Image (tube, rainbow, N blue to C red; front, side, top):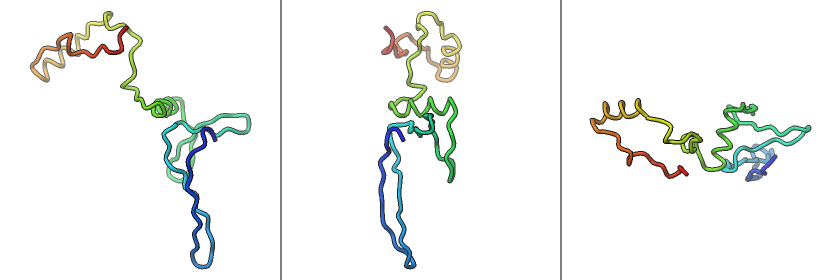
Length: 110
């Protein structure tokens, strides 16, 4: 696996039988990949089985691993090229207020 997840190993005895309990702790460095057989594949747990992730889920895991969400990503489209007419209209309809230029967050703009 890459990266190696944190684990917790516990010895347990029950009804005269000994068990080793291995817990894989939730990690923050997603995605975790299976590296073997010449491949590098990401999986997620669904119930009691591991399922290979698709492209969209892989992107979500990569963003989560970098402490981001899709909604927090900056746009590659320049703010100046768009009028936001529909947004202004819906905002005014719902709040009764006019959406001003100062209401937009342009921290990411260059």
